[in-house]
Length: 598
Image 1 (cartoon, helix red, strand yellow):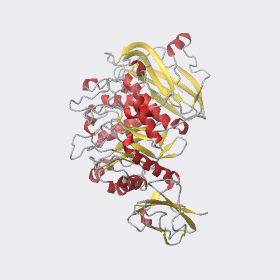
Image 2 (image 1 turned 60 degrees about the vertical axis):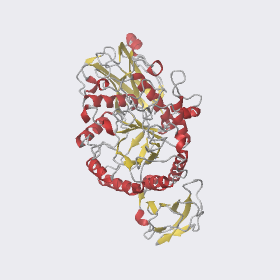
Image 3 (image 1 turned 135 degrees about the vertical axis):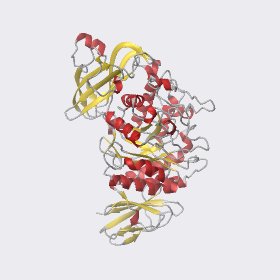
Image 4 (image 1 turned 180 degrees about the horizontal axis):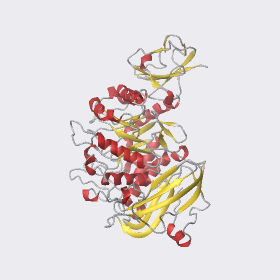
């Protein structure tokens, strides 16, 4: 529910009127506060992005949020494509019911937007120090997506959780990385003279439905439909670069152009249209993993440091998008220096940018960083980050699918030992030239399903996204029809169905309890054991230290469905037990659920 609050008229009448009045708003729903001053424009000499600072302090009985605002041109830029106007905006999403108060801080001054000193700048008359109250009630019974469950959060564990306390596994599309390179988004173009990866998403226009958002007389239906399709397959995440200047595709950025001189000027209508897309994803329960930079452009803002350009960039992203409850900030693809690319950020620069985002995001949205693909490079770059209290996890890249399980286990154990558990999502699977093949090339996806999907989840990963590789279209840059990996989405949703059956947030990788090399074990010892066998063979489970009886059920990772009985239906604790044979030996792999019988 959006509430636009017109300050000009109210302040002419009564400066300290309770602006929201007696209206009651819904928990987890955004409230929009608009402030009108004299018209300006994106390219004005007095930079509206840098030389003005709007923020509102919101307080409830036990909480306080300082929420930054942003220049919104005419206040309707997604529809009008306006680059001028006098509207500034704050969007606040209350996370608890009850009474709230607020006080406005609105000033101007040189570089004030990135100055944390509350005493600098000149107040904007009529708006600075205005205040009011409003009430928030529990979520509507009709709330959908994250409006029902609440914000995605990090809670000092291996798994993301929603505000209502439920664990969250993330599954979806890692490709195309230039998801936002879409022809219907204002000022979106490729500056590469040799190739263009601008998308129409035309294959998904059929997935747009009446009542879904669009803009400017029907624009946006392709990308909105693409999100609908992904959600229909049970997927709940999308990986999206917000800056790929100098990168692979060179077609996504938030600035008014790709030229360096414009890195302090933002394209208001483009970002407003991004916001429509993110809002729809939020309603569908889809996470947007915003990848804030690419390998090739780590140094284009402030040479990699967190100074004026980078601070302003993060502030704009936070002000415009942090209110969404489906945001993960990914601090950079393949971040850091490597033998193949020496122009990367160093340890100090990584710490600084992560700290800045965490300290300035009022909602504390999860922060991850994308890794290199090889173990040696991971060790060098990630080890200093262990225990860092602003970093919540890793967006994992692996070149070899057969190393996924052990590598994820390794880094989860390291993070646990540092007293700062990491969420680790298996987001980019190699090799780089192949990734996840299309259904035409690999209809059954055996290696991806066995080694990557189940291998990651049985290690304790917080989710899996599918990267499409470079060699064959539709690939990581030119893909715009997600139906090309339909079978992979379906197998992924089946794995998610299995994990919904078990208390995975309380379970750990326990491969030492399995005697066979073709199997993994994930357990809450004495209660629940999940065994995944990469062959249609039996497995042995060590229950030597346990007592009682346990049921044995089998689950088909290819077809899903109900739990089935194998040749052995029950085992007893106190020894190493054989779990029997599966219901159907023609199925290449099985998941086995062993549960204590009370």
